[in-house]
Length: 468
Image 1 (cartoon, helix red, strand yellow):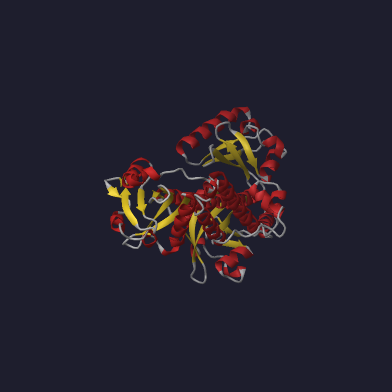
Image 2: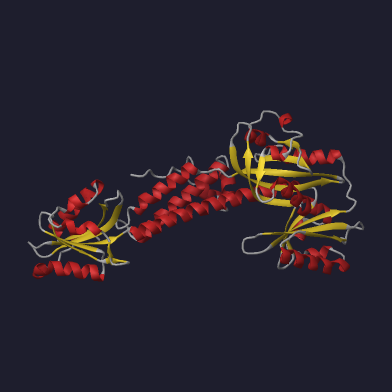
């Protein structure tokens, strides 16, 4: 509603009571109230009390006799002129945000509205302290950044996990801990169980074990969940006469507990040629940085992405060297991590530091999977960077949201929420397109939305608006 279309009530009889009205306003509904003459010179200042009887603006009493425009920051003086002009013309002025400087260089943001008390009466301006709203806005921005960071870290970790999960030559399955049902299985598990993927996923793992071994599996699952430690038993599958080992490892899940199961036949055949085929499949055409080591942590191969990350030019500079030459891992170090991978079959999102050849130290995450062919055993490592992905676009989003927050009082809440949602959606779509190398279909899969929603704008997603 436009204040210029309003007819102000005749408040002339209240003019003599302007100081008392100011005090009543700060007592009932505001933090500060000012009474001014027609020239905008302050005649009365009334303030509410904050916490331990401290005034919002301790120096405000010295404003008496000064012009209102001289008490605010230079960048908000124009708004004071707008308030006074509007109240002189219509008797009412809509809310505007002003900033009062403090002695220590800080400032206090206050949202003011104003009313004229009668045709020739004084102007009463009442204000609300916006620091609490600013704190809420800052928490919103911090929560949004944390959400964004966690979202993409989870996406990247999932991709690394699946990469190693699919190339592992051991049968690897994810199991819902509560129902003991298979939620995911790699290609080796499908081959070992001799069952199509659709007949594995959703079914209880115990249904693929001999009857006499099912109770042992249930007991193992209970023990692993209770101790939060990996454990292993010998079992027999219904479609194999050869005994097998079953190792269970607890994994954190979103809203549910998961178990990582690794199954290996006791006399599983394998050759060096088969192992090298597995390693080639792991490294070829993969954009993720990948390293394969022997069971002691000495490098066997590295793909081009890892060589770039290490700032090395040739794979020969990597082979034979130990992981400790490039990585530092907290909580027991690399040796403890290698032992854990050999025992449980996998490690996911282990924080580490990468030491490149040019002396750079980069924060990274290590994911690992045990790869085995017969008696040969090695470990596949996937390296994910923890740098400020999307930092530039994140800063642009923060600036755009800050500018939008400045329109509180100018726009209604539903419109502000729609604008904020639109900014955040465009930001995530832009990040997804960047990670998918501008492929709308791949970006849509990353975000779990339709391709039409990604590619509906010609030329991609427009940049976020600049801060005015």
